[in-house]
Image (tube, rainbow, N blue to C red; front, side, top):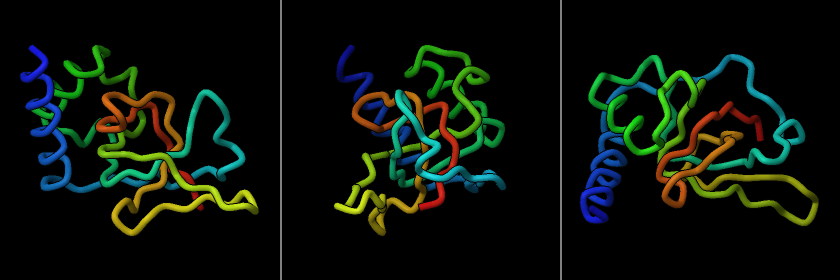
Length: 120
């Protein structure tokens, strides 16, 4: 069972990076608007839930155990916490170009849900 979930997570991550077009919210928030329990995440990919194909939707729903309308508006894939400098400014590395404010992370950031874009 554990290996099945790990395989699914790996496949989902690869699929997220290789396929489709990302969606950006036209109204990103500022870092100070991302308040607990949400955290600023740097994600390799970000998708609008409406842009996911049926197979991807099914995989995400099976991993987070929630119907997709409850995880939107954006889903982040392969996310890590943003770094914060001594002045309080946040940044993301070049390999994670999508800064998001997310409510929940699953499997160490493989999937982050209830995300909105953040302007860093």
